[in-house]
Length: 172
Image (cartoon, rainbow, N blue to C red; front, side, top):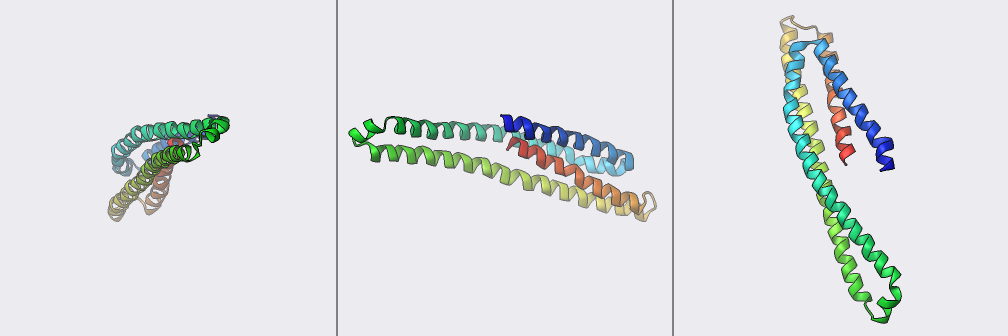
C-alpha cells in the first residue's frame, strides 16, 4: 500500500492531469482535428472500464491464492514436527503444489488481461492517429490547417495515449 501511495497514486494523478492538459491543448490547436481525435474517447472509456472490472476480479483472486500459499507454508513450517511425526510430507507437498498452481493460474489470468489491454489502447491510438493524419492531410491540402499545426497536433496526440498506459499500470 505504501509503494502504491508513493509511486502509483502520484503516477495516476500525473496521468490524469496529462490527459486533461493534452485534451485542452488539442482543442486549442484545432477544434476540427480535436473532435476527430476525441471520437476515440468512448472506445477508450469502454476498454478501460472493462479492464478495471476484470482486473479487480483477477487481482482479488490473485491475492486470495497467494494468501493460501502463505498460510499453507506457514502452517507446515510451524507444525513441522507434527508433519514429520505423522509422515505427512508427501501430502503436504501435494497440497502446496495445488495451492501454488492455483496461484500461478490466477496470475496468468491477470497477466493476460494486461496483455490484451495495452495493445488495444495502442491500436486505438494508432488508428486515431492515422485517421487524424488523413483528415489533417486533407485539411492541409485545402489550406484549412497548416502543416506545422498538423505536425504539432500529431505529436500531442501521441502524448494523449501515453497516460492511458500509466493508468493501466496503476491498476496492475
